[in-house]
Length: 333
Image (cartoon, rainbow, N blue to C red; front, side, top):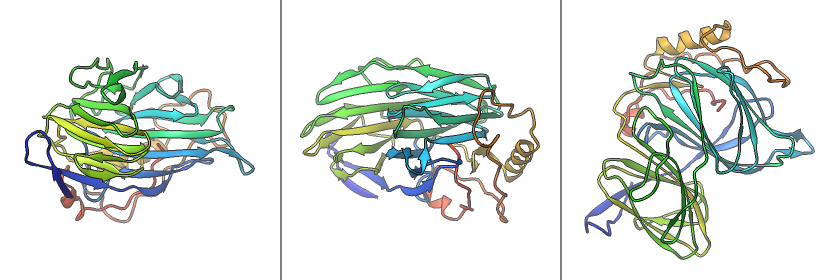
């Protein structure tokens, strides 16, 4: 964690920079992603608990004819799909058939249990985007399956534009998307050489993921793939852009105080809950349902074996997470 000047208060703004690790996204014809959350030094930004960044990745070449992630399960979370380029066909066991397109936000709520598939469309040769997860709080984690779609309009900033797909930024039009905890999600497109003083909710934690370009967050330099994190307190972020324009994902939310167990595609509260969810999925239980219309090479992704250790909860305190069990199978998205 580094310290940079806070241009508004004159006191120090602490910026924690998380660098991603390469992870294979599960599936028959999948792709590699850079994962910054969860991280050994931090578990959450608000209730955001999982950040995958990928591309631009060629998914059609001599060895493959697209991305194909067969049906797989989720519990206790919401998934947010946001693309910069390409197109993905989504099907789930709530009966939803939808397309994921650049600038259009799809939010799927697993609740007690859901299954879904993700397949790039025939005309998609390049995929580029982010896959994000939100941990559902205790009161809502066993809710019914749901799906929301929203297309935000670009809004002008002094130095660029913003697309707010979840929550709101002070002075700008917010998103109608429903979440169980207060959250923010937005894409920022900033001009080369610009300095943007971005008003934010001081009760939120915030993070900036750099997709393209280079940017300084409150005086600390970030490069492509970095996730710069700021705890609650500041009422603005200062973003200084380098010699080329930058594209960023801005995340935020009220601190998530619950502890969770996250393994493979499941979020629960105890080791026993995760074991039960895996067993039910492998048994074909109604908890996860069936994905109609998927015609890929296999019917579903099988669950990996549970590690030979007890899965322990992780809290929002990154240092505490270092002493917990971190063995996990790659998520299937």
